[in-house]
Length: 233
View: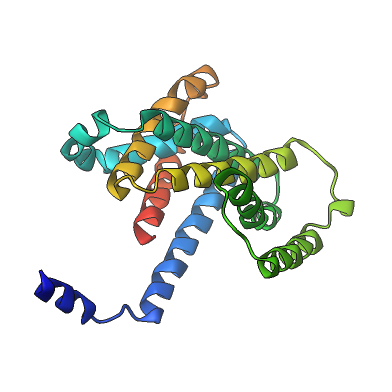
């Protein structure tokens, strides 16, 4: 046992450039996906795109789902997992709707408020301590977001509400993930993919727009890029 610990402690650290490379690749994949969502969002409802994205992801991790089926069907905190998936479903749907209705740069700028909202939620909902310097820096960050967004020059519309809705529900999903910190990472990922697919299936069916063969590759690419982005993380 001690030998294992010693060998682990001697393992070489991951080079910074290696981690940065994966992060940049993830950003490139997600940005490409967002651009496709913006184009396809003009034709297909946001919840349908979320469902198809998660369906592609589910198909790609199906072997893992089968391997961990016992863990997925015997969860110790099923309610907590369902709440997390529900928040994520709402966040993704609002996010896709925002990308379809607003410029990509504006949605991205609004997304920078999420760490600020998440920090406030961590204090209120999780009882975490946040230092004054962090609150001060958060305030500076918020001023930076206001400068980028320039709210005085933007007319409020459904797209803006969707963008802020994505921030709120995304932050709540992060808080719920924190509450599930003791769960297996693999189980968290798989239940997220499975749950997201089933939870968005009925809403997607209600507003379903038939997918043409010419646009099917782009729809599949949304799910593929999103799944590859998760692997990069």
